Length: 136
Image 1 (cartoon, rainbow, N blue to C red):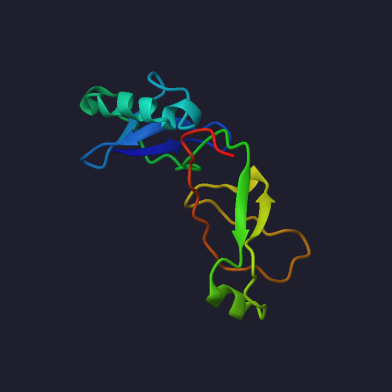
Image 2: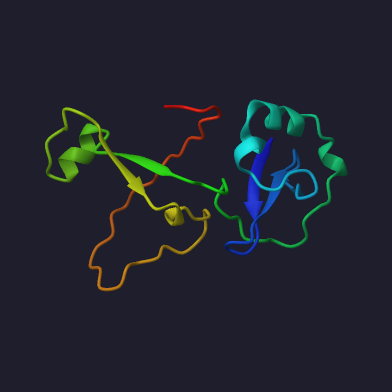
């Protein structure tokens, strides 16, 4: 089961890629690919669906961010030695933890927004995880 969000930025709908690689609409089943949908119970409900009965999505819509309604994006900096070396920095003794604005999350083919007057972008990829239960 491959869950996706598709459509115009800020108006993404929930979808699922079926076993044949076709995009199916999930908007009559779940509100979004977020929160309760990603819980063990929500995922179990989706696994029971007969995907061939879901409506096909026409055309080739934009794929959006994979998860919606992100309230907090916590990042870990210099989390591997090569990154510290390329930045010319010492390997930290403790993890460097910082927040990123949830607006930084984009779709896989979306344009990179370059801040005005910037002279350099850093090439990196972020790996996000969803914690399915309350954590502290």
